[in-house]
Image (spheres, rainbow, N blue to C red):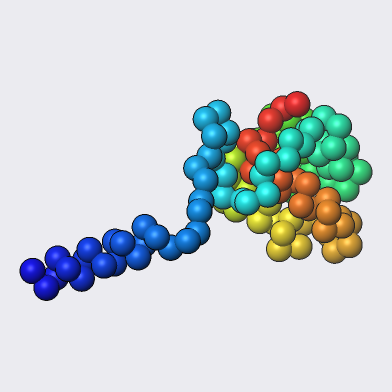
Length: 131
């Protein structure tokens, strides 16, 4: 009986924590990034950024670093030579591309501004659409 009373108190406290969290709306991709609500255009925002900053090393051919080809959407979404997916749609924190950008391991230092990295992370978190 003592344990049931303690359990009831814990459950009551958890249920009345005062913090309201909303569940995702139907049709919204699940994400692991809180800022994923923004609709980012791959063609207009992400791809031009890759073209300007990533193509010297990731444009294809035998010289492509780790075989990650960023010239087309399919390449961005694909795997490298190590078979690790570059992007996991809706999961920015688990996507190699976002991890590399956020940790500053790619592209070379100073090539991207924080806002540009954030844009790519938002695009991936929002589902990495080919739009």
